[in-house]
Image (cartoon, rainbow, N blue to C red; front, top):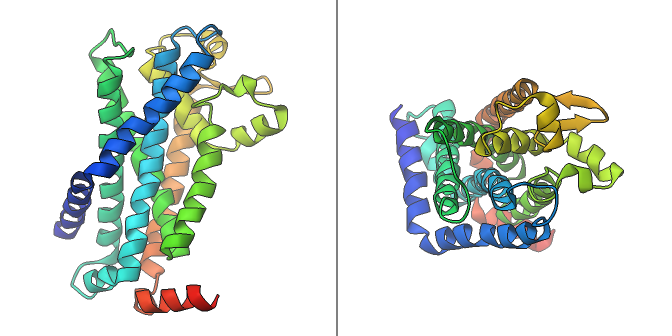
Length: 278
């Protein structure tokens, strides 16, 4: 437990100290709110600002969870991870510390954007809604931090990880309905969106933020708050099961991969040499 808490605190301290990154992580999402909110201003969306903000918040949680995995790669290459693992700390505890740190930081970033959103359009009619939102962000942050840690243990190279991360986050976010409703996508891309786990996370989170949990499935479909796969409606409960399953699978994969990784064969000079000579 001490190892988990130590790594968790380390991740939070690094997040707080990186003030420039924090500021840009708060400013950049509102660019999407402004651009896409203006596009959908006169469209079928009832409250475009809240609609867009809910998508921006959950994609920020997702991207932040993956970004924190890059620190794991840096720790591997710098030798910090080897120093940790020669201590009595168990590998599973180290992995859990990394996952908890990533999930916490991603949730904090989501909360900060949500607080700003309260001043520009998001409104709640029930006190329980923010509680559900917080729980959703924590859960989704943990689920996708597993994805990030799994990628980190497989890539184990800072520059390569950035490329892989971009290749993952771009299609995952833009084909999730967070910025563009699925009904506006071409049929081929819509099919890809159905395979995207972020599609279900976005639909579930947006339904909570917009306080539409009381609506019937037909009404949720009309407002595009459920995933419609050629007439088959993925209910909120099914969406939750899908997210749970994906999160559990990647948590198991990431911890297993982390435990099996041979960090003794990783060092900065070797990595640099490999990059230099191909």
